[in-house]
Image 1: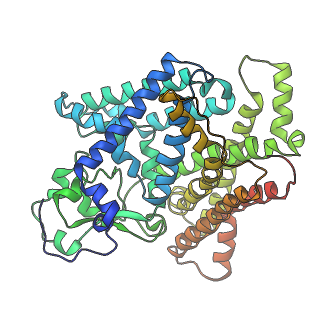
Image 2 (image 1 turned 135 degrees about the vertical axis):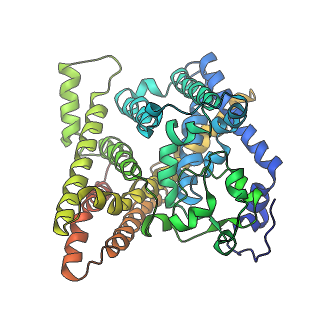
Image 3 (image 1 turned 45 degrees about the horizontal axis):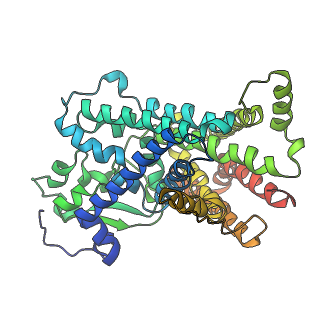
Length: 459
């Protein structure tokens, strides 16, 4: 490691007793990566060998009660894209990349929409349209087996870990939503200005430049593997004000991030409120997607297809895109700014609505399902007849306190919108009007939250 004579910040997490030891101690990180790899491989194996839920509670628990809610949602909302640092695909991929032919990735594959589109088409569409199929152990195992093979072949063939920055379905998600958290890599700019060895850049297999993260107010595709922090102590992993990369100006060109926010807000937050939240309430039969879905189930029955879920997804996507486009178009015209420029700047406000709002679901479902699912998966794995019951039920009033995250998400989004409009030097009544118009998606999200809270019966 290159040692620079400097005073380390108290906010540097790498100098904290427990978390610092975890990130700095390479053997510990390797053990963690091996453990996550073992969970991936075992989840796939058992899903193929024991293909049904009654035979196998393990596969579903690993992927849907552990990986998605905690390794991704919670980690992105706090430490950013930290899961990428222990991702089993990149862990094995690093070694495959070293022995592979080191080919440049073809130009036609340099398209983030390939991986992200795969996530939308192969996961989020089926989870609503074919819910009974997708989460069966054998389909889950097959999904992750194909994804894993695709990832490792890509790591082997293409240089500079091109899979992570171009093809990974989760890569665009972690890169975009990792900006919401309250920790980021920073560098001592006083040292970096005179540095000529560029140890941090040389240590990065992704060919990134950590010394530019501060200047750009963006970590780009950084996967927080911490190789650069081990190469030079001028690189720190520091606590920061939440979402600074979202509400401060950025010199980085990241045109896809806002599209990721819009798409996942539509297919996760809004669709789940349509289908799962309002769809389990006393007004269920009055909902348009339920009425249309019921009609299609009779008029055009298709085995295993849930027309209600499919229609709810379609309506959520259509409404979300309509609100975002209309509100941003009107606002952009009012200040004579190109729509694309306004969209890329002010659209940053959408990130908390999905991610921070998602903590409401993760928090309550930890007690309702996730904890017992993971515990029972462990019991099954060791051959124990023990069975853990859920820690709570929807009848427990305290569980609904996690719904406060939805209101926090609204406040968070309003703050980012306020900051973003401040960069446009808007003042007075005009700024207030544009704030109200541009925030239309926030108000719609808040309306759905309040509407569900006012309905007295049902989950």
